[in-house]
Length: 256
Image (cartoon, rainbow, N blue to C red; front, side, top):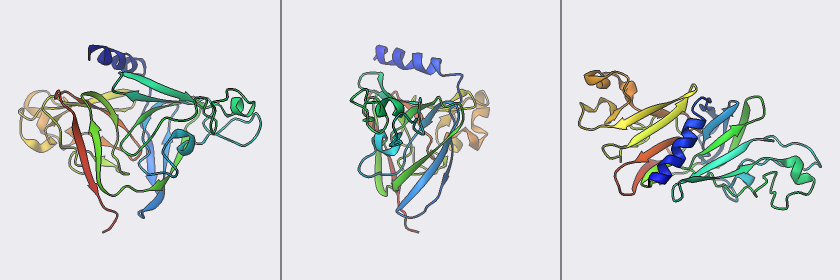
């Protein structure tokens, strides 16, 4: 467990000075639609909150192929990193359509040099390193998840997102209340992390049991803003300190 924590802490420190907040718009309230998110230069924690066909692997949802020999793709030079809780390390893939078109390496799929096999299923989140030199707009297309959606919260760090397109208070509006005292949630934006610790014994429940340390002492509970929030297409970290696996259950219906 200590090895996992150290491996993650090293990456958190490495990218702690890089902007990670994505802005987003949703263009459908139907079962099938699309979502645009705009990611800045550098690292962002992003999520695809739609069910894509045939799957949510990045070769499909982040297609970098241009069908032209030697031409760069829309995400050329960018990198995706996905945290694997079981190992405490990352799997990664890079966008290089020009290399694919030249015939090397053979594992390229749609402009991703390692085959684009990393998944971005609803509820999962990944680092997206935008190395293009300018903000990028990413369009996700698919079916809006409905019914009961479960996000697993393994012991330790989890890189997750709302399993449905959502913007707002994660506790009050997104049902992220299945936490344990001592758990930690980290969001990222404006070049830094904001930490929310679950502290159910420190005051009234104005903040669903979260404490972001904005007002030391009893003042922690004076602001409704002490709850964590997320934008559409934005992921975050959740550290489960309970010692046992847990889950975040979100019930969503597309019907009025």
